[in-house]
Image 1 (tube, rainbow, N blue to C red):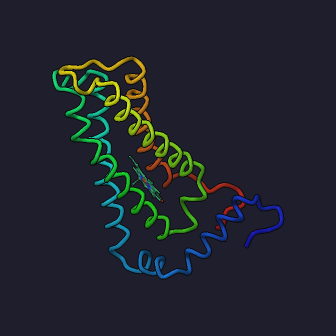
Image 2 (cartoon, helix red, strand yellow):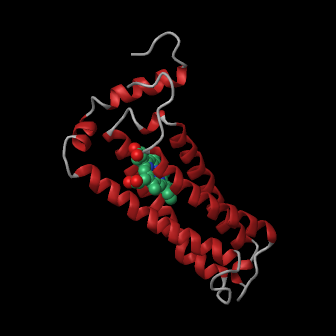
Length: 180
Ligand code: HEM
């Protein structure tokens, strides 16, 4: 129950969590023993795909791997797996929320993680767009410009921060006013 002093965002999230806990989705995810470990496993496998793919793109733009191959080749091969894995992460992440509606969404680190996921997804899309539009991609052994390199380095750091934030959710405490 939310009191009059509960901030509107917390009250809205509490109402959402309470509604989610009464849905058939909650029963399906939380009520069957093997579902949560399976969803967690899929989340972790998708992390492996997204990080490996995005890291190869970022490291190529930085000129640290496959420098003799065109940037285009890496983009063509790895942008799609990044998009697919982020979609799987979003679905499995939502299922993990449904399994314990009053947990992750009341931790600051969860929202920081989501903001970082949004930022790095946009940055990765922009890297592909900018590299192709500028024709860098078509150049054998093409060297990326400094702005692309900076975005690639920041993206790499952000993916790592997201993984840390994901693990951290399990250890963070809920903010004041969150349902117990
Ligand atoms: C796109 C939307 C995403 C949502 C909604 C989401 C949501 C979640 C949730 C609810 C958990 C469980 C936290 C807990 O209760 O302890 C979790 C765990 C985790 N997430 Fe995500 N996630 C998303 C994307 C990502 C991405 C892109 C990464 C990393 C590249 C990531 C990395 C992790 C990690 C490392 C864990 C801990 C796994 C474990 O210890 O079993 N997540 N995520």
